[in-house]
Image 1 (cartoon, rainbow, N blue to C red):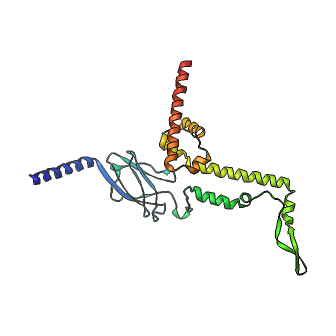
Image 2 (image 1 turned 30 degrees about the vertical axis):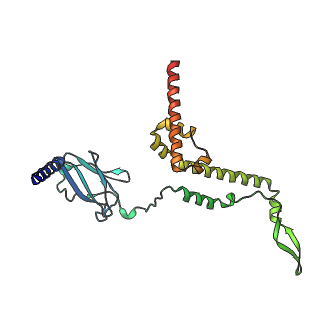
Image 3 (image 1 turned 90 degrees about the vertical axis):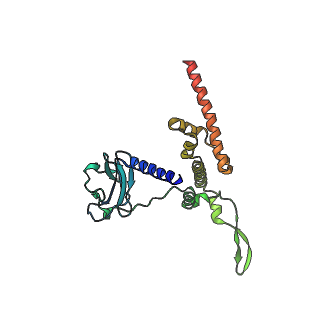
Length: 256
């Protein structure tokens, strides 16, 4: 009895696999540049049915599509003509040559956004402004000597002159405050990101823009809140926003 059940299960699996595979074919191949010698990596291979893949480092691809489908290739936003699957003679090795010269392509280095790295770099780039302090009267740390015997400590002459450079001091202080505010804004944007708000609220378009402005969190909350507390703030803010939207909608209906 157990053996019979096992045989029936195997038959059902075979039938299911056959059913899903009906009308489906696999197209394999490689993509080369215009010289037909250099394989091309990261070429998009797409189909009318929505299936897609990209070529590997050797230019190879493999794609399962319906027999009635068509496929095409795209690189740097430039698509090729569409190829009907039924007209492909050798589906095990369908090779395509794109009008691109691999040896002429410039190497592009892509860096993912990194708030901490960018912030550190910004501090290094504008170190003079970030470290600027309003000048005041101070004494030098070295003794003033007369012959071989020290006679006392003296005033820092350069710092003393800077006291009277009013415009320069005002501009530097203003620039420093602006840099510090930009750093704060970027930090808030880093945590209160549109991607996170969309994920938690599903807001889009003008409603998302309005929410991002009205419920932008203060710095102390961004600094002190844990990830759970911060997401809870966004969710509760969305509940308030949603209630206000309903109230505004009701008021408009009453006015009409």
